[in-house]
Image (cartoon, rainbow, N blue to C red; front, side):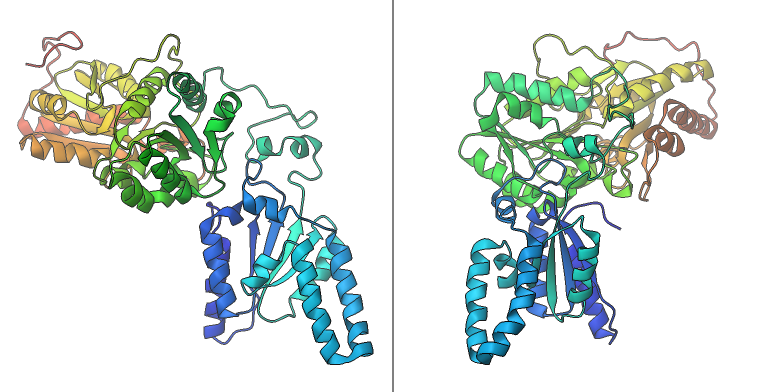
Length: 533
């Protein structure tokens, strides 16, 4: 199973080594794209494979793209492509003739000359220096010749690399012309390639991109960094306005993070935009290169929470858990588009590492007009007052929690709702106040329950010395979430309005039964934002 780039060579080498240890003779093939080859892990695998000399074939699928167009020195290196057919067939035909005419010694000298010439004109010397026999570049859409090449290569012992040149989207003109748009597609008209109209609300990604452009106009120290995802993260828009302040480092999230750390050390304000699922790759760099020195790096974590139809590997449900434990780290999560703008401004102004996590897709339709106003880090927002139970909601769970609270009123349950906003540091005072007032707290998050916001709330209750406050945590259970529509996943997990209502109602009912209490429909209400009693 795979979802993150750069892993195939290491996995295949492990399989090949297991084969050797068990005395089997099957063949192992790793396929890797030229975009994925920019990942440092790919070179670690190549380096080890060349040293082990085991029988392994690596197919490099070179289409000059990952999701967006490839960048960097490696891409330029691979683009030094000559006709693979001509070179390899010439070598196959001439080598036996030279050997027959002039003998082994001259043939050996000719071979060394050939390697020198080959290193100058064919982008394969790098791989041969790493211990691989290099074959290519080969036209990847010439199927008969491709089969012929693989038939020959599979009989050669040791590590081999077959360099195959292809066209992304081959055979469908709209995909060939706009390959980056067809990496992962929403519904479109097959005849024209035009996308079908989606919801009109701005996406969180668009709001992030537009806000960053606006803030960059005010502060020339702001620079943006992406790991081969300028379109996916929205930073292509930033690059159009500030081409000299956008850095696409390729599929190299670890490098992106430490590169940002270096920029921050010398006075810049880097903003690193990475999907939540890919943030998993940079834990060490966040700890060692950013947080340890308390550097001014902002992480814009896109696709946080339930992502849906990108497979189990791309659900962004772990970032709160693995970031929350890091000293000096601040974590923010907006309830809507406008709050994202405010958080981004506050994050960039904050003198230390900040992660702003926001979901995939369209927002709730909040206005994004007017100047960007920063918010106070560490302060939660009371969005609905109540006396019986308090829902502590993070980010995308605020509006479903509000809907659940309105429904609970029909059950005689008066529910308060707090927009947590700042997961770290927590507003322990407001949480403590409502823990004392209600005695019942329900945490709601699109993150793993293990170590997530709910765990932070329990820690806050301990710190506030609220031994009688009971907590019910709603979030992602200890399992991987598979491919499905986001709304279907939330419904199955009880993270939609009805699920939150049902869980809260059961929690309050059970608590009242334990205490011999009854509902209090006549309990006095307080105005939203008023101080708790």
